[in-house]
Image 1 (cartoon, rainbow, N blue to C red):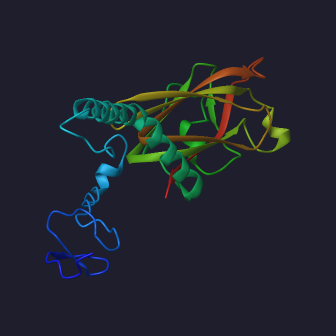
Image 2: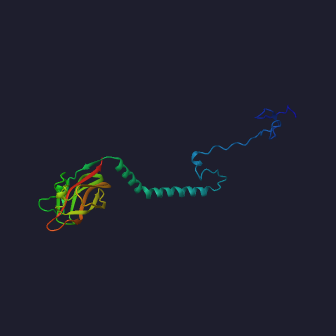
Image 3: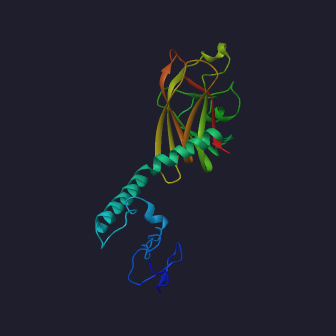
Length: 237
């Protein structure tokens, strides 16, 4: 072995080697090691982009796959957006606080003498709105749109058990809500035939007016009429 040979020193042991050698003549270390490929950018580490391409092989297929995935995610997000928004709003309703909101105008389609529609929102449970029969409705208009989170209904003529049954009651109420954009939604409130307040969660946004129509009468015989003691509306604070 000629230790005085001229050439590039070995990167491992420093021994000079002739230019035509591929391995060190002393320790067999590769004299021209292959260069490691540069690291991929972060976006190329995501399948199917993480594969290195050679001469454009498979690039079109991967592009189409990525495009299809992006379009599917966009379509899914568009379809699920209303449901997702409703879920968020419902969660905020449950976690947040609520406060009572007072209507600025109350109108009834019919009322018996001495029992006006305003009695149903006067805060007194021993006074009531008297309606001649089923199908009668009462409409509440509010000053500004709000998120209706709950309605509390106190049915009958009074919360007193003795006075509750002296007049008829509606055991079902159709709740029609009008939003600020004119969209209407209807819910059916089924009441238990007993005195006292009954709470109905709602979760309706941008409410501007509410109409309640009395249905399914009970105890409506003789000269009795339907009685509704109190209605309370609550918004998210």
